[in-house]
Amino acid sequence: MEILIFIVTTIVTFLVMEMITWLTHKYIMHGFLWYLHKDHHQPKYQNIFEKNDAFFVIFAAPSILLFYCGINTQLNYLFFIGLGILFYGLAYFFVHDILIHQRIKWFSRTDIKYFKGLRKAHKIHHKHLGKEKGECFGMLNVPKKYFSK
Image (cartoon, rainbow, N blue to C red):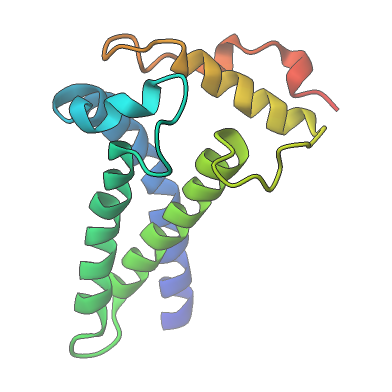
């Protein structure tokens, strides 16, 4: 039963991270930490890394702390919350940085319409170079043809 609780804790944490990431993006990245996120909205990357990459460290810190607290005395649910955050971070990196922004050129020549739709929706978000109006519902503005089979 304990293993099932740990699995559910990891999955629920992964799912909750989507909401936390959206809120963080809207109110923190496009808010008081805009100076770190601003270069992410520039048309071309100036370097391999950007200031926005600091958010990987910011999001990794709670996960690392939870791993430590989750195994400090004995394995407990905190470890699996940290694991859910880690899995979400890996999924986010794969979708956002590899599929959408193509910072690693693994899927640069794909003809998969869903991937093209994701890129198009994200471009709608990135058309706003400023701090304001950065959190539009880009997926709602993408023609359905990009997501059909």
